[in-house]
Image 1: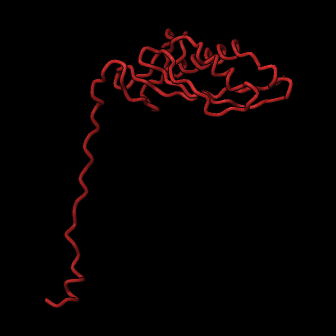
Image 2: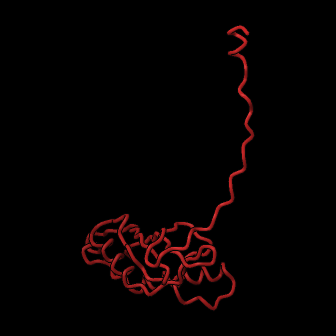
Image 3: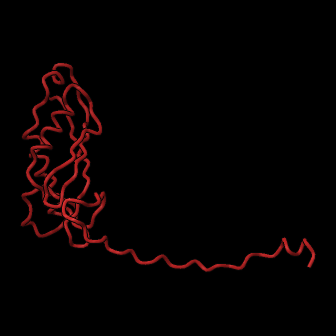
Length: 150
């Protein structure tokens, strides 16, 4: 066998194996668990549990959330006096029991707007928790809050 012939030999072909099916997450200990970002059933603001259609229930829950936010937010005086407008983003976790935890400002426009949005998020009632494989799970939620002077 000469050296040139050995270089031109192709390696044996390997067939790609199908990936194994994904397994459900292991049962979690109480109080400990992964935080999901995408779930089968998203967490929802309360008040629309009796709406049967899933899409209509989501729209209803979003409407109730907006009503709660804008019914409770007080435009900070310093922001109003200085014409500060824009969108604040609050990130929080909806826990397995629907309570809100780990709320934090991830985008702020200043003049007290981020603090005000955070205050209102921390006063929200318990949500209907998100579910994965039929079980309640912890879900991260990003909530944009618009501040606009009229």
